[in-house]
Image (cartoon, rainbow, N blue to C red; front, side, top):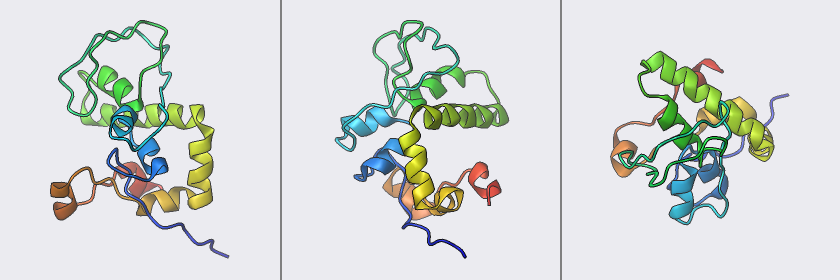
Length: 147
């Protein structure tokens, strides 16, 4: 018997559904927009030093992050480690970061499972702005290959 999937959501820092905002990578941006009450820092690869980065559009880091301190979000970790990687390596990095995030926040994994797991995630969207909403819906190859 197939279980019914929960209604799909848009996973974005713009989402007013806290769980959808928590699943996005730039969770500090979602928090700044008032869509999250809590932060979701991510420990990743021994949390090396990260210099300030004010060039990234989604989450700017105005201060250096000391070694040993978790990244403020999955997006922060991704922006730090993606430098010099090709697209395949960036994809693998993102998977690794998301695995770390979901391991560190099992309540997110529990809600994903309750909503229908990978099948539910496959029906969700990641539309970040109105232009994307009118042209295409972002789906990763990981989502496509998990079905």
